[in-house]
Amino acid sequence: MAAQFGRRLRKGAATTAVAAVAVAALSASQAPGVNDHGRQSAADAIPSPDASASDGSATGNSPYYTDLPPLNSPNPSPSTGTGPVTPGTTEAGIPATVLDAYKKAETALRDAKPGCNLPWQLLAAIGRVESGQARGGRVKADGTTISPILGPQLDGNGFALIKDTDNGAYDGNSDYDQAVGPMQFIPSTWAWAGRDGNGDGKKDPNNVYDAALAAGHYLCRNDWDLSVQGDLDRAILSYNNSREYLNLVMRWLEYYRKGTHEVPDGTGTLPGNRSDNGAGARPTPSTPSTPSGPGTTPGTQAPGGSTPKPSPRPDKPGGGGTTTPKPPTTTPPGTPDTPPTTPPTPTDTVDHLEDAGTAKLTAMAGDAFGKRISTRAETKAGKAVAKVRIRFTIIGDTDTTFAGGESVATVATNSSGVAVAPALQAGEKTGGVTVRATVVGRTVAGLDYKATVTERAADKLTRTGDAALTCTPGGEFANQVEVKATYQGAVADGVAATATLIKSADDPTASDKGPYFKDADGEAVRTLTGLKTDAKGLLKLPKLYADDTTGTFLLRIGTAGGATLTVELTVAAAETSSPSPSASPSA
Image 1 (spheres, rainbow, N blue to C red):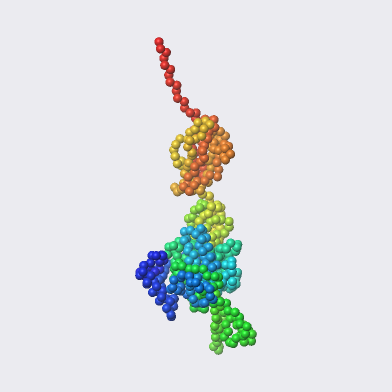
Image 2 (cartoon, rainbow, N blue to C red):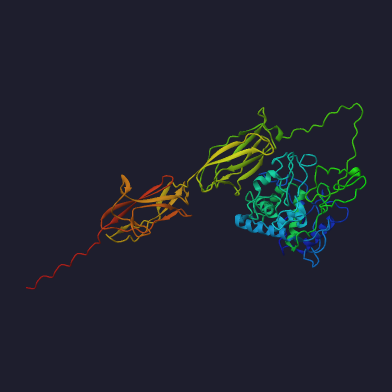
């Protein structure tokens, strides 16, 4: 039965026994003195799915809040949201603007990627764990946070090492990246995943509408179907690659599914525990007007009127935690003053990118490319570099995308230093497409790949019927011409075609007599352009008419790709019956 806990318990599907065991497990997890980390939980009962193959994580695996949902029912309480914000308590109320952003993002994804089946409660669960619902809904009317929400700098000291990728544009840090905003995107991820969710023409990670929509698209990439537990697990792990994180988000997801309610902005509850054991989010402290003694916290004055500097590593969203000064370190006599050195990361060693045997990239409009781009990261000496993130970006005016509809994909190099981009999906715009490979977190020359999208084509045309096409002078043909187009035996849909009544088999120019089509004004035309086969590869031509010329005529249909079919038309006078022989005169 334990194996069932990691799977989604659909409403009304859980048995009494399962519910009892689940409550017991959750009760134990929240007992005093029990830490959530290192303990098997409901979701631990199933094998850990692989992390996303397409990139590291949206947050750079930054710290997150670990407060668990309460055991009590999440039904709204009359007094909920009317009092002051209390750190460390949990309940189901979600600030009005934040809740609206989640629901609008779900609606947008339902149209953009209906196969993803994104529930807004998943965004709420991630938003709760990442930023305490934008610090309890401290947002402006347009959804922008009143003050920036920043995670700690990812300097490798207890966290991932991600050197600056945005020149401090999003996080204000030109040395290292920091997760930004209510959904905690690192700048290098926001650069391609960012969306404009409130229609103001900007993509701002500090705006809850923009961040929620971006998170929805991020979770829906790779053709994941979030109604399938395996895909849901992979999507959550791709946001922050931690098993504990997955377990926690799943618990909040199930909690919000049971019900939630709206509370006024700024009155939501704030979490009190964080995965790196840092202080929880608290309201920004005000600066006292009188100086305090030694041991002051950031924002208070020390003796002499000086203000101690805050810790260079701000708290995970919310900040405001108390900073405890570290005792000064002493150096034994005779020890040389050698500055500490940080060993280079794999990214630091990359000198250039090389093509790793990418074949010619060609596809017809609407088709998937049969070949994929492969890029190898190398040192100056030509040695392969593993565990480096390569970003593939489709540039230029094209509707070609990667599978899943994205124009950017980030892939880590394997043990051979090779990163293989997701398959390309050709759009309807034909012509050249450029895909640029770059190293995330390091400035080296990018590597451009050229792909070509050709127009849809057919290599064979056949009539769908075999009835003779005949007409009397001045009349109309009883049967319309219909053909089917195929390419290498498969239906060729959306293929451009032309139809021309030609002079002869040796002269494909349009005839000036014989059968004809009619244009919108009822005038005779003998060449039709702009035709296209339908989804089944079928093309049905308009009605044909005949002038007074009799004889045999030819209709030639041609498509992109060179497929042609010549159809014979006959115009002849109607047959008249022979008169009956006259009776012989009587003698």
